[in-house]
Image (cartoon, rainbow, N blue to C red; front, side, top):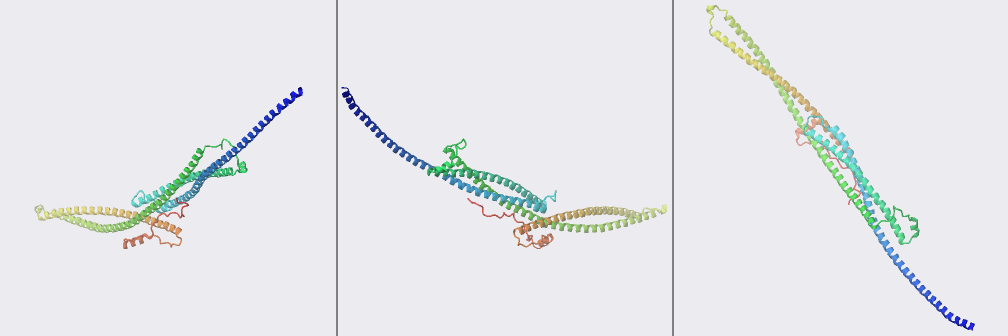
Length: 439
């Protein structure tokens, strides 16, 4: 009875177990199917994600490469701008040295402004204006040299910032390309720990920084171009202005040389005429003095006659015609003596005035001759300065003779269109090649 019941229980338990096993098998099959499906989905997601990442990386590399090209071109232009500004600075320093030489030798030693002070005329005013103009230009170009130093510092600083950013972009491009190529070794070798200094920033901040570098670079280029144009215009203006003032001084000196020669001739002629008048007055004075002496003798003779006639007897002492004529003659002699005395005083006064006038004429001639000597020395020194500069520029040129005032005056007298041997040249531009760039 017992065994019968046990066999029945076994018969019931086996199908139940089989059903459980089938259920488990079904669950395993479903799990395997789901796992395979999940693997397929994960693989598909990874492939899609990898494609999107690579596409994003390529776009990022393209953006960085575009900015790198822009900044690289800007860096090259800034490098050329540094060469240009350095070129302009060298030219400005050369101009400053030339101005120092012009002021020290040509103006202070040759023209010698203020040597005739307090006298002032167009020549002295032109020389002083030339002197002040050159000094003003020297101060201006000295300031320009300092401005060029400041500009060089700004351009170099901007270029250095751009170069630092370029190196960062090149490193970034290498990292991004390694990420695209899944170069794990490169990434592991160049990986840096994330700190507060190099933590990630927003893309908008990166773009603003790149745009700021570009704006600063373009502004530095603009400043370099403007400074170059301004310096070149200042140099051209200096050449024209200095040449014009030098020509004005030269023309004024030539004009005053000729004028002083005419003045000396006129003063010498007036001195000769005054001496002739003085000789004539000496003769007139001698004649007048002799006439006065003769009149005095005649007056004494008349007084003697009157005194002799007064000794007549009282009966014969008459006021006759003889006494009247003698008295009339005595009065006439006194009037004549008075007239000749006045004439003699006038002659003496004229002689005194003529003597003073001759002394003044001599002083005036001496002054004009001194001015003439100074002007001749100025002309010779300025001509010598011009020849030395021409010999420095063109060593094969022959020396011309020194400017001579007498030769100039004689030739100018014969030919009114005569021009002195040499004339002042403009301050030349320094020798220079084409600028490193021309945008």
